[in-house]
Amino acid sequence: MNIKEVHEAKIKFFQKNLLSWYSENGRNFPWRKESAKNYELIIAEVFLQRTRAETVGRFLPSFFIKYPSWKKLGDAKEEELQEIIKPLGLYKQRGTRLYKLAQELKIRKGRFPKERNQIEEISMMGQYITNAYELYVLKKKSPLLDVNMAI
Image (cartoon, rainbow, N blue to C red; front, side, top):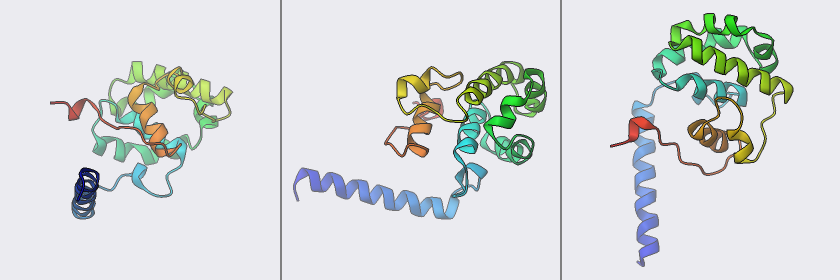
């Protein structure tokens, strides 16, 4: 085996073991469902910042009933968003940022730009959420490393 083949074999070994571990130990969250819409994936990533996955997982179903689309979210008032996301914490700043994101996407009719630099200009779309958007929505390879993975 040459070095490239050894490297590929290690990657396949790691992938196989990781997927096997996940099938036994993975947690079931709304954003991991095949049926999750792009809107739901982005909102989940926004709420997962500084909030436990279990908390977001319990919160999202009722949020999506009230705000099932960018249009409905864009129609909400800033104070209304702050109030509804209180259970997630950081509700004042997060509510304001979510409101700005919703207004931007309302103007864009729920469509995100395809270019990374344009995505990062949108409120709340920092490096991590932009990477998640590229990975899950645009199907591009992007790293999803967050602060919890740092040594």
